[in-house]
Length: 332
Image 1 (cartoon, one colour):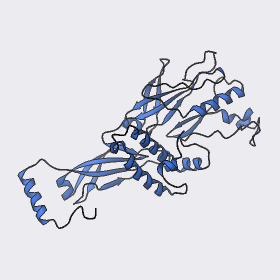
Image 2 (cartoon, rainbow, N blue to C red; image 1 turned 30 degrees about the horizontal axis):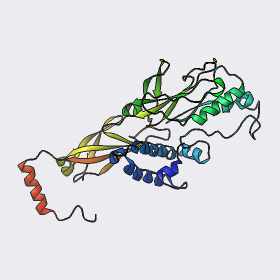
Image 3 (cartoon, rainbow, N blue to C red; image 1 turned 90 degrees about the horizontal axis):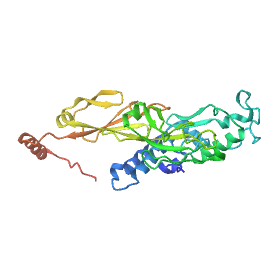
Image 4 (spheres, rainbow, N blue to C red; image 1 turned 180 degrees about the horizontal axis):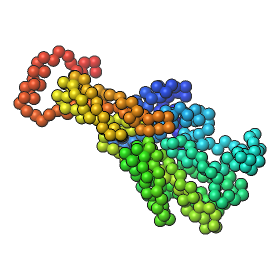
C-alpha cells in the first residue's frame, strides 16, 4: 500500500502548492538515484516521491485525495454499497434509470490522465458477480510487477479469470510525448497500448479482459501494465517539471551568447547574459511534461565546459588569479 503523499514529501496537509514544490525539490536532490548509486532501493524511493508529487501538484487530484475519494496511488476508494440501500440511491436509481446503482460496477483506469471510467463489463451477469469481481480487483490493484516481463496473477473470485501485471520499458521521450507500445501478453496475444503524453515512471494502465481466462468459462481477468520509463541522457523528470544540464563554452559564459537548448518540442534559443556562472538556472515555462493541470516547466542549468589546455588558456587563468579579489568559497 502506497504511503500518504504528504508524508512522502514531508509537508503538512495544509501546505500551499509552493511549499509542496519546494519540499519536493529539496527531497528530490537527496533521493535522486545518481546521488545514491550504492543504494539498491534509491530508484523505488525516488519513484515514490515523484508519484506523491504528481498527485499533490494536481489541484483536482489533491482535493479528491483530501476528500477520501482516491487513495495515495490515485485509485478510487471503495466507500460503500451504493445502490444497495447504503444511504445513496438504491436499486433503480442509477444513471439513466439503470438498476442496482450500476455506477459502482464501472471499470477504472489509473494513469497520468487521472481516473477514467468506462462502461460496464460486456456480457453482464448477475450484479452480485460484478460486485465481487470489482471489489477483489480494487483490493489487489496495488501489486506491482517483479521486473521486466513479470506477470503477477491476481485473485480468482468465484471462478473468474485472474488478473496479471506486467512491466513495459518505455523510452523517456516516448513516455513524455506520448506513443503506442506493443505489449505481448502471456497468452501470446500482442496488444498495442497507448501511452498518454506525460506518462511518469511507475504508472499503471488497465487492459480490461486481457488477463488469464477462467477454466470455468467465466470472463477473463484484466492485465495491468506498469510503465518503467527509461532514463534519458539529458532530461530528468521532477513531477511534471523537467531539468536539463546545458554545456556552455567558457567564452559564451563570459561574453554572453545565444545558445540552442533542446526541449520536448525541439530546440529553442536561450540568451545567456555576460558573466554567466556555472550552475545558473533558467526557467522555460510550459516546456516540461504535459499533464491534465497544464504542462510543467523546463529548468535549464548552465554547466561550463573548459576548452582544451593551452598556453593561452593558462596565461589567461594566471591573469584572472592575480586580479581576483574575492574568494568563491567565502561563507561555506
